[in-house]
Length: 367
Ligand SMILES: NC(=O)c1ccc[n+]([C@@H]2O[C@H](COP(=O)([O-])OP(=O)(O)OC[C@H]3O[C@@H](n4cnc5c(N)ncnc54)[C@H](OP(=O)(O)O)[C@@H]3O)[C@@H](O)[C@H]2O)c1
View 1 (cartoon, rainbow, N blue to C red):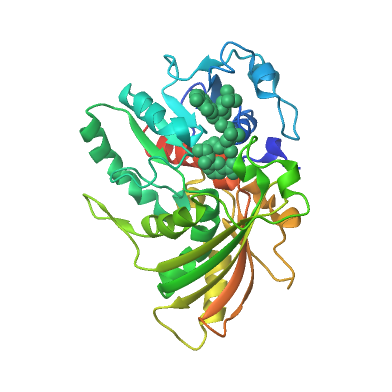
View 2 (view 1 turned 120 degrees about the horizontal axis):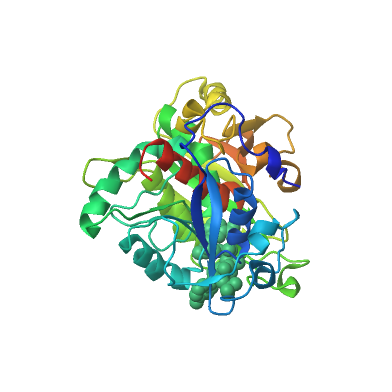
């Protein structure tokens, strides 16, 4: 079980002055939305002020509308909020989005147009020309694109996104390798938990005693998003990293946690590449660790030595679900190396990632 009360770092950080910042969550009743509500309960900078969902939920108490499904107690303050309908005027300027993608694109644009800072999980704007696709440990400097986005929209509002849940685990696990040697080609196969499909996603009859070798739209996201994340902002556009990626994505009967097996070839080689990569994974840190953001894991990547790890149930909650676990780094007879990575899909892969993105924006004076 995730210990939310201790999930936040106690070391000094760029705490905002005065009271906690009021925030709204769009799609607050869903799988990702409920994680937002859970992670915001004890957040030192942000306070859940508004919950927004569909007309099916609007007007009900959050307790009634959400049918709380997480393994911590629903906070009373959140349970008593009256759910607002998507499109309603909001009092919060910072807006997290865990909306279904059928409505996320238009709704997020609407709120950004009204001057809100929209921090989204949904796929709709991820590949936008001036929309940062952020993993703060990897590409915090991509926030430079926000200026261009504000100019285009002609206001203070903007959208930042976090990647697809599998992409986050993959991009974090390979970032030290890309920096050291460059990656030429990569193949990844995922084993993805059912919470990644949302609450209405996969019926128990379909997934129990089964593996489904298809997740709609997923392979394209895993093949394109890492290239934007690991690329650079040249002042007017994102230049993608050059690597080629082939992905196969599978739904498996676990609740939370996306496990993936990765094999890849390098652009450069030396005799000690496996040792050097392992050391780079173990010592990897980024801007959130340097500036002490409250939700940042102490170490974003953990290398596990046991030959049968990482495992979904045993390792997904490492650093309260915010760290990616890596193991089984070894040579590959076809490409250069193979390894296994694991990410908690609704925490580091969704709500926790978005909250870390918002912390970065606050620390950089962009809220
Ligand atoms: N689950 C994951 O691991 C994960 C990871 C990364 C990204 N994402 C992305 O995050 C988003 C949410 O995913 P999820 O798994 O949380 O989905 P979900 O459990 O199905 O929740 C969807 C949310 O969107 C709301 N919604 C649906 N249709 C709506 C409409 N017509 N108008 C207004 N609100 C509407 C729902 O409100 P009602 O309850 O009122 O219907 C609910 O709050 C998706 O875009 C998904 O791709 C998910």
